[in-house]
Length: 304
Image (cartoon, rainbow, N blue to C red; front, side, top):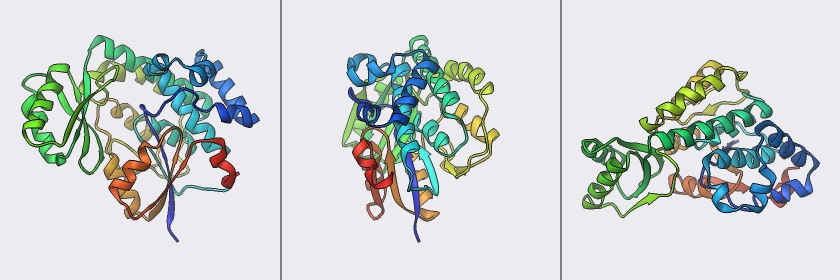
């Protein structure tokens, strides 16, 4: 019998109208969304349901919004139990909540604090990110090393075979983009982001997040959580906290995480939350596994 994995999306999956159907159809969803507003002090309903998109794109809003959409869905699923969980960047917090490593009320405050810290770090040390398609990880790491004479740049997300995101200072990233094109990358595209996430430019955010993390109660996870930093399963609460801190300045090893879950027996993946980004990545990593999306209230029918 194969194993099931729940995977949770990160930033970039938000859209105006997200989770509105959950709020309208479920008392539990409604209560969770109102609780999140109280915990963060943000008008999340208005921002998620009505936008504007510009406000929803601000990382201090985006992060609680995506977290909320994902966690409401996972808490409404009754008949499906994951064997493993993982989340992409911010999604790791949704995964940890689903695995019982942190309580919803505490986690939504933590995610909001993370968003604020990252936004602030992005203003203090402006940077950018770019997607590079069609180069091997080793090659791109080498390119980043070359380009770093122009400014900080490193691989930030190893998403799927041949799809990697780089992050760092504007000069460093643009230099790496230039070299990547010369080296035959199929596509090189700068991303619209409010900071150089998963790079050393997030060091200030790390110091700020540490304070909130230290005061947030964590528990040992009930299910193995494959973390971004190591791509390996973790359940110990102290290790989880350390890795969440390291995650801000370290690359997201998504491809490896998915491969490791498959090696450990996962053959069904459920992306829980807004969008379909992770479904696409999993298909590229291994087209043989089954992948489902649970995003809308209507998707829950089978699992209530």
